[in-house]
Image (cartoon, rainbow, N blue to C red; front, side, top):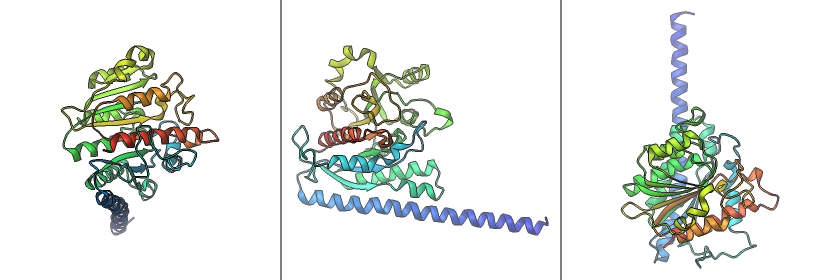
Length: 333
C-alpha cells in the first residue's frame, strides 16, 4: 500500500474515533441533563412543602456487567419500585413515616446505563457518570441519594460522590455475605467483588463495618486487615448481636452510609440473588441493626437483587422494597 493510502486510512480512523467520542459526549450530556432536571423538579417540590432537613430520593443504576456470575441485577430497579408501591401493603414505614409524603421519598429515575454502554463508553467514564448523577441529586438540597442497584460495583462511584460532595469521609455499614474487597477480582478493578477495595483506597471510609459475612477467603481477610475493616462473620453473630444492634456511627465524620447487598440475608428470606449463600441474617436481624443505629444516615444503596432468580410471587422484590422503605425513613428528617 502506498504512503498516501496508509495516511488516508489513518486519517479516517482518527476521524471515526473523533466522531465516536463526540457522540459519546452527547449521550453522556443528555444522560446527566435527564438526572439534573428530574432532581431539580423533586428538589423544588420538597422545598416548597418545607420542614425537611433531609429527604431520600431514589436513583436507579441498572448495571450488571461487573457481576462475576449472573448479570440479572441490571433489571432490578423497576422491579423494586413496583414492589415499593404494591397495594398489598400500605405506604407507612415501621417508624411511622408516610412514603406518599415527598419529604420522605422522591424518585429521580435511572441513570441510562445501557444507552451509555451501547455507544462504547468504558467503565472509567461510566463510573464517573454515576458519580456525577449522585452529585446532581445532592445539589438539590435537601435530597439525599438512596440508590437502587444494580450489582455491588455501583457502591464505589456512589460513595465517592457522596464523600466528595460532603467534603470528607463517612462511616459505612455494609451488610453482605461477602466482603467485596478483592484487589481486582478476575482482573477487573470495578468488579462487584472489588468495590470496597476501591472505596478504602480512596479514603472514603473512616470505619467500614461488614456484617453478615460467611463467604470469605484468605485474600478477603488479608485485605480486611490491610484496610482496618471491622468484619463480623455469621459464625459469631450470636456473640456479636448485642453490639451490632446498638451501633453508634458517624460522629466526627460526614455521616453514615448504609450499603445492603441482599445476599446478606439468608436465602430463605431473599432467594432472588445471584450468589445464594445459606446461613445469613434474618430479615428482622437486618432491620434491627438499621433501626437501632444511632447516627446521621446521609445516603445508602440496596444492591444485588436478581429478578431472574426471584420466586414467582416476587418475594425478594418485596424484601428489597421493604429495606428501601425503611432506609428512606432512616435518611429523611
